[in-house]
Image (cartoon, rainbow, N blue to C red):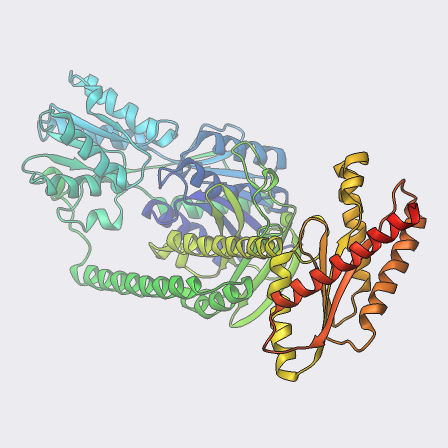
Length: 635
């Protein structure tokens, strides 16, 4: 990648305001300093599906950290501790500078932290001392997350300092996701416990849904119960009631994290650890109003813009989903995707698929939880670059990008495409805000993934149908038409010959002595004999003829390009080839067959079945003649 600085960022849950604010700071520094940023982003832990999460987290398996100059780790956004540990181990092995945001548990990495402890302690003290809360429910983040653990410990500590009992039945352990707030209130409502004086929440996303759930139950905020959050997000401060929360310098933490990597690369030795201050903002949800919400006109303008953008994205996704549902091939899928990419508002969109994405499921293409590998090669069937489309046949997955970046200041988002735990590939959105500005980015990737999976399944369904059709019309032992296949093909040929009043010949062939071979040498040898006879019969057919195995040792030939003497010529040719074959295979028995043929002008008065019956009768006459001849020879 030349002398351009390239930094990887590991993150989960781009649709949360916490991540978005930090990303804004990272992107500002990157654009100001011509740094390339590559976000590897999952939406794990959101749909309560372990198999789905394996597919989401597969995007982290793609990252080759040795190709980057540094990495920013937002591991606090990843719920799965094993996934986090695998990422950290890969970064250590790569030996590149790493900055962890809001997590100081990795002493060998640089870190930028925000003082969660002091701010949460002040928040809990305020609720207890200023608002006289004694019974408090706490909605926690995952305790495997250092931020969540620090806030949780601060809550317990302040409760103890104020001689208040902690009822652990009143603590809900969530994942920092917005739906956790609603779930916490639902669990409380079902518990039969008395209403607490306050719900203290570990972040705003959970607090906001908790407020909405409490209001639906008929409770007033803060008259009946206090609710507080943490992060002071835009939605929190403009909610009704405005949320008491903790203001944190998220934009600054992202900006400074990126600057640390930049300084290290340029020979500057920054401090190993940086602590940023946070402070509570007491507002309407606890009964205070010390700070006004954003300007109302600005709020209306931003709300309208957000609503308008969401409506446009919903419309786009609905149209995309409908169009993709009509596609039946990969090429059709890419053509539809090309039509909609421009609506994402990005400079470049790359759709990269695993080289075996269209294969049937097998163990080598399903990513297990403890498997950190990715498919060796990728293909990029669609690269949309400022309105121009191109493709890349194959490229090593360790390159990550299908084409090398030639300039700096690019912001790219790598998003996984998968069906359950099966990795299909990923897409890259470059220089566009859709992944962080839209609430529907995850919906987009799921829509694309499901459509690709449908194409894969349709491909294999068609293969299966072709195989079933082949089995239906092809004899598996002899690999020529069976009775069904012969009737399907020959009936159309016969009708055409009737129209043209053409001569046709239908020959019925019966193997001689199959019972003798089976009884004396076994059925495997009998099958061998049938196969070899079928091969000879097939060789006797010209381009205008078709043959089939009509029964156990019975065969038919239908020829539409014949003349007087064709039946005798067929019998001579068949017997000659059998004589040659017997000389080659040198079996203790002789392969032979009896042939009965009907030569006639195709007529509406006859049917294919009637001709077959006549040829069959003729064949038995010949077989009888051969049998009588052998008897007379013995006399």
